[in-house]
Image (tube, rainbow, N blue to C red; front, side, top):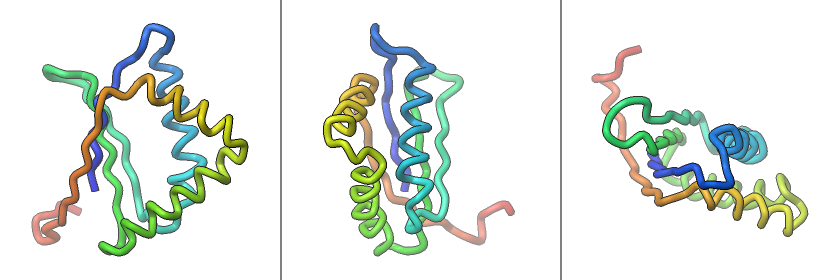
Length: 114
């Protein structure tokens, strides 16, 4: 699955804070989610719009996508056990988000360079 985030740095934010938020989220949820085989976070470094961040997440099969989403919700609660702190994290991250989209792709193995 590829998720494309359109992000911006708000007046009361910074690139440093954005990277810290992304790292905290990954450490508390993604890295602990056994249904996620791998995940790569990439940012746009050249071109017309430098606000793009693309997250490519790999799952073993179709069913693991839903299972990973359920597990992610559980990990959100354990990562931020205090509901107020969790809400604050999401509100802070939300200041950076313009929009996002999700796309699901299937690999053509014989075309992969390994």
